[in-house]
Amino acid sequence: MSAPSSSLSSFVSSSIGKKILVALTGAVLVLFVLGHMIGNLLVFVGKDAINEYGHMLQTSLHGGGVWIARLGIFGSIIVHVILTIQLTKANRAARADRYGFEATQVASKSSRTMIMSGLTILAFFVYHILHYTVRVWHGFGTAKYEIEIDGHKAHNVYQMVIDGFSWAPASIVYLIAMGLLCSHLSHGVSSLFQTLGLNTEKTAPLFKKLGWAYALIIFAGNAAIVLSIWLFGYGR
Amino acid sequence: MSNLNLQLKVWRQSSANAKGTFQEIEARDIPDHASFLEMMDIVNERMIAKGEEPVAFDHDCREGICGMCSMVINGVPHGPEKATTTCQLHMRKFKTGDTIWVEPFRARAFPVVKDLVVDRSAFDRIQQAGGFVTVRTGAPQDANALPIGKDVADAAMDAAACIGCGACVAACKNASAMLFVGAKAGQLNSLPQGQPEKTRRTLGMVRQMDKEGFGNCTNQYECEASCPKEIKRSWIGKLNRDYAVSAAVEAVVGLGNASSGGE
Image 1: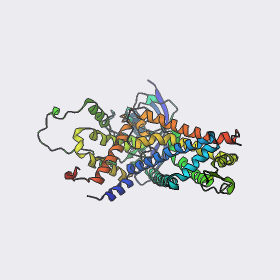
Image 2 (image 1 turned 90 degrees about the vertical axis):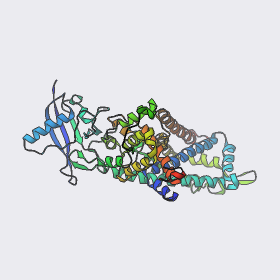
Image 3 (image 1 turned 90 degrees about the horizontal axis):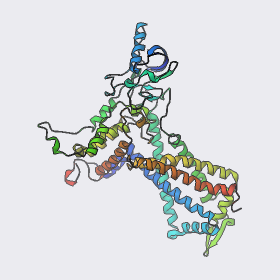
Image 4 (image 1 turned 120 degrees about the horizontal axis):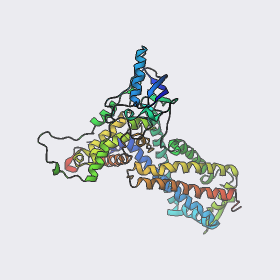
């Protein structure tokens, strides 16, 4: 019989195998956005809270922790995006001739625009990394945004967040991206339970509500940071 | 009883490789107690009388159990009524003056043969790839020799209600066959008689489904909404689960390897 490696490749090339990988990588990213949001909400606790949290992330496991997390997240994004593009291309090919009269009975708008919301979020992700991680704009990479915590050099995360969202165009881009993320999660979270085979007739309604609640919480938490700084002048 | 005057937009395609178009057909004086297929019969009789080519469409039992009638009516397979086939749809559901779009099931795996007739033999090949139990012929065992819980038997019966019409594929935004394969594999995978070949069946049917060029499920459940037999989405969830387990068994143990715990 075939070697485990050829079984793995036939799993990855199968429709359900691809979808299971999309669901698993999606689950990683779903949990990441929640953790990321909770960390960011420390901006409301105060300057020291978020700066020390940022410093903790940067220095955990002697600086290795942040790279382990980054590799996990980047890897998940790459697998998630490549497989969903392959699946979407196969789906379009399977229905090459469109209906003259298109009707939709139950599929939500969000579920029908997953590839568009997803790719836009990917573009936003690149912008977000350049904005706050690589720090290419607004002088975020300069000594002006450096502070000292316990005798170590650290980023002034608090000031970067406040200054970043004081600029309207950035705030607008972030809000649009969070709206799309909310749409993407409203289908994606409940969908991943179905793909992983965890949905039963009893659990399906619960997972559907959970998906919506999750999407709204992520939107509300992240939008609160942007809006309170941009429109209500928090920290300025 | 009253008669309806309708405007039909019917897909006409002379052969598999010909280019198709919509033909506008007047359907006047249609009795409202006619079924949709009887309406098509009336329209065809009139076309034949005028020397025109009648509309080709599939039909057989005309009582909702054979799965032969197809047609997408105003964008919905088998038309707007819930849990019915096209032959069970009555013209009283329409109003005089309505325009009705009538199209074939559209999927790469269901090529058009002519007009509204599509080739659904991809489903037969999926069934042949595992949708059965292998039994020795000979004297049957006593029915009570194999106890099956009532709830399990009922659930398997729900799945067995699938008539293989293909409405799930036609309704799916991606022309996926997951509801059909989920019902057919799940019916046998639920029962004790289906256990010995469960791994082989699940892998075989899913691989054949992929090979036929159906799309991938995106969990939108248009299939469930269109199914004339109300097959539930939970069968897709079970297929996902059974496939993951079967793929793991194949990778670790292998098929046909009973000494190490496989089949």
